[in-house]
Length: 384
Image 1 (cartoon, one colour):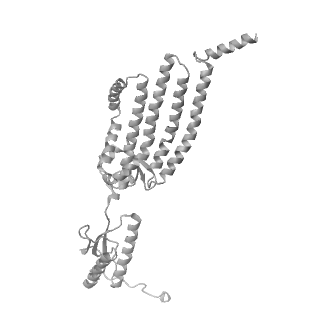
Image 2: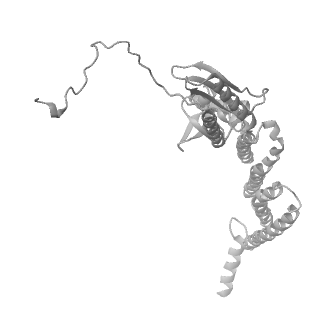
Image 3: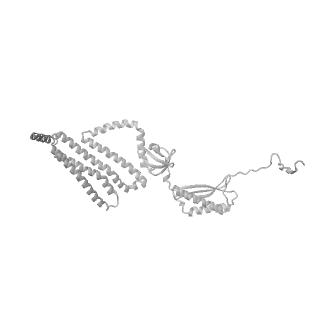
């Protein structure tokens, strides 16, 4: 009886699963687990050696690239272990075909996965072409836009490569998607319009991330430029999303592109001021603007005007038209404050005064004659 039972065990061992003996299955499992162990050891050794070599480089592109390919490289050992395990066992022709498709699909997946993860560190190479894109913030915006497009293309290519391994006609699928795309495009005209408007914003450098812009509806700082819309943070900290097509087709002020900030004041002094006083005030203001260092006085860049402009209803008006060197809002306010204090000091030093709105009334005669004196009698004289 024990001999018969042993024969049953040998029969099950030889038949195994799907006509594969249990011994081959155990051997294949052992080979696969061995590669999993080697993967851990190799990953640590490889990272250690690469980091030692990376210390000799001045940029972090090397370290970020290693970090990006670390997981795909570990997964490569899983594929190798799975492939060798499949060679140990004797599979049927049908199973062998499916197994080969699985291996090739995993290889294609790993390749495109590696490319996808390496796009971010490789994008640092575009930093050397910042002069082509303009200033730094615009460079970052355009780089982010193209990285998104590149990732989308890599994902689509990877899916197509895997589908092709399983016998799908990728060309036919793309052709059918083209017909579907035409139908979808008719119903998604606004999305396509916003996409092309976004490309126009990028290529024309209308504005960029971090710019202070103003439209007829919104004023604030650009936080993100997306495919469909642009996010603007208003000064009350509210976030507004504006369709790109609207931004591309309406008047837009980009305050961040100012070369200088302007100060345009009309300073009114009293009519009692003498000609010499006004002349001294003009000369002192002009001297301060040209010598304090806060203002751009190069005539090739900006124009500075300090003149007696007009005779107003209540004042003699002095026009001050100048530009500050700084474009930062807070610094501009400080320059304005110093200028205001200086002008007040100049006017007071000349014994002149600032005018304020006033009216003078001239009466030629009273309609009812001279008024009587009041009171006519003292209280103690009443009744006498």
